Figure (tube, rainbow, N blue to C red):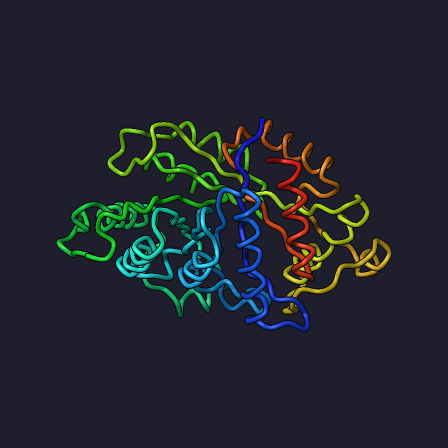
Amino acid sequence: MSVPLSILDLVSISEGSTARDAIEASMNSARLADEWGYRRIWFAEHHNTPNLAASSTALLISQAAQCTDKIRLGSGGVMLPNHAPLMVAEQYGTLANMHGNRIDLGLGRAPGTDMMTAQALSRSSAEPQQFAQHIYDLQGWFAEDGTAYSMPIVSAVSAGTNVPIWVLGSTVNGASIAGQLGLPFSVASHFAPDQLDQAIQVYRDAFNPAAPTAELEEPYVMAGINVMVADNDDEAQREFTVVEQMFQDIQTGQRRLLQPPLNAEQFSARGPADHAMLRMKAVGTPHTVKQELEAFVERTGADELITVTYAYDPAVRDRSYELLAETWF
């Protein structure tokens, strides 16, 4: 049953801390995760979000590579409409040349922000056919001669790096694209669980290992799940209120940094909350979480899990990573 575990890090900023503090804590977590046996750490691109410092994935990956040895590092993901594809090829090719064969490029079609900010960032189309064409060109820039397949433009710095490309998605649309292109699929079930089962089935049904873009012979699914591990269930549930408060703030339009955890009475006093977006979760003691993760793997058939853990205190997050590693690996 045991599948690889990975980490998705959004570099959260807690109340009373700064972006500098958040980045420093994230790099320390990466160093520890490398020691504890996690498969990969990905950084997720977000903009105009005051409580997250993960805006520049390439820079975070480069910094994390300098304090780790084995763990894979990547984007979960680069929101391609915000970028010129050639620039992405050059950035990730540079990373591969600097840090070796540990770099992943996860690509998404969503902007990772609000529409006003998306318009300010916009550099390429999110339309599915264009998105697929950009992936094809990126593969050309990562191939041996470093030339895009649709145009005679060369990227010397990415040539021959063969950076693996993933498609990210939360719906059947992203799943279908990933399958048709023959690429690995990372499903964002940690915040968008509604189409989880359907998306995975669509991906597997659509998977085409003969596609010109195909990098796999068989489908490969990595599914996202929220995790908080503590020494007892009550403490884990209390710490999980950090992310629950964050999603309450999203629903109510508040723009706060990460807040301290609350006990059950304090949390219920904040009013009703819709936790549907966070229902893919494993929260509790190591034994409890292991059982819940195993059930999630059984349900989805996922080949790998990518865990998401928010904590007001970075030491709590690192302790959760450690307890999970001890019980899983």
